[in-house]
Length: 104
Ligand SMILES: [Zn+2]
Image (cartoon, rainbow, N blue to C red; front, top):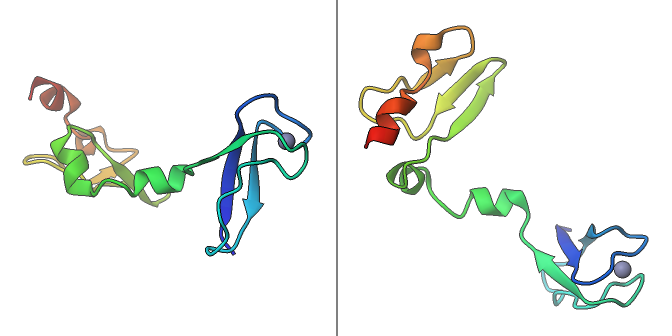
């Protein structure tokens, strides 16, 4: 079952301000905390946010997105012309040219 995150709109209780609940996809989103009955809001997990935009959209928006491929190895999935596709922690010349990005 997927895990959903909820946040207390008012006072947090023993569950914490933000807490996770396992729910079936078919379950309706909760509006009350099962612990304190306080009003809660379903929040998007970070995982969802990062997938709302495709890599090319991010690039067009001027973001540089690095995906870790190995220890010390990052792939620049938003590489622009002239950027190195892979970035190695030990090789500064492979780090994206951020100055150029800002100038654009
Ligand atoms: Zn609560």
